[in-house]
Length: 304
Length: 275
Image (spheres, rainbow over the protein chains, first blue to last red):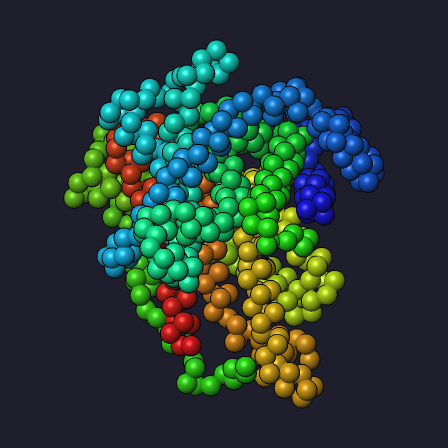
């Protein structure tokens, strides 16, 4: 995990230095004169040796200093922290939706042993993975915003002052983010439960007179959910990635929208800081999931 | 243990719904070279924002352009970017996976840690980083999306080669003095090709989805080229008045991505049948 993190950090740093192209030239355009270019280069620190730049950036990042945004003239760390007020609730909301919907769904699908239902679900879940989440977002807007008028569209919410309204504003984005993930997780729950139901201990439990629902919920489901835990790490990462587009669709001022804005402005310190932030979150999440898995199932050893 | 390739074991192609949908998609897209019902960029302001009809199968946009024709023409770009990205992922991923899986040891460790690092960043973030550094454009979008898919292809190739290099015919080839390059390309690769084809198909689906996403953000295909993702972005302003505008491009993306997922299924079944 430490090595992976370090490699990501190096990669994010190098992507802006090694890939052909002068960042100063890209930011200012070809009309800029040499003096302007030189000034921006020194502001970016691009005129110093590569290793110096890297150490300065890394030490800064460890202290929580990711530099200053070129476009907004604000510390990158502070900008990210502000945006987390939106992104963290959004991610938690959709993960809660994923868990809340896909587990019952997967269990019911495992228990309904009918060929047509199985076939339909198999295609539906693949369709769920194929649907672009930003299109689902548009459809949800059309359904709940335009046709039913349940949710006001294009409303800007004050996140600090009106938490209730902001939570409501998160509902559609969270659903749009959760939908593809639900397709994946329900598939895992269903598969896992079917595997467990074929095991000998289930037959034993039923044989000693335990009722079927009790066998399913107390024995089989618990074991079936263990592999699902590992998928959750991936799902969390998917949701963070999906939020980049979904926040743009709904104009939600989160980390994802900030990244898109930063790329639009070629605001390199900001992009770099955001990429680092996202990478650290994803690596930490995966590590936490690995740890959680070990706590749930003591047979699993972390060998790395 | 040994699985010598014999004609009896030859994979027979499973022609299922995936192939059907893929061929249909390619036919419609290729047909757009010969012509679309209406010129895709021709504006016709009196006919703006019209619902689907027999003249305009998918309706028209805010400039009166025929959406169906634009979807057909956009398909060329979406598929071309998708195929370009897939080629990048497959070439880079296969090279990395072959080296790691065949030689193992420290090379395997180094390459796979690199892939882990690449996977720590969500695909769309990698794509945005590349676009930020290299600028927008066809080649850069393909490169960005290609990089996004590389780690997965590398992993699949690596595990295929971990299995492949233990086969007896590989040992036999090596005993006969075949070079590593010959063993990799002529003995292991042809016998382990199916998981790679499946992965490549899924990769293509993901690349098309990624292109649509980038174009929706305005950082992929640039106007005046029609692109499915961009059409959705333009449609968003009109969701209150023109339901069909946002419907058609989204449906098209879904069908295209679905087609390549199903194609992956079909390819997978081609193998399991032959075993």
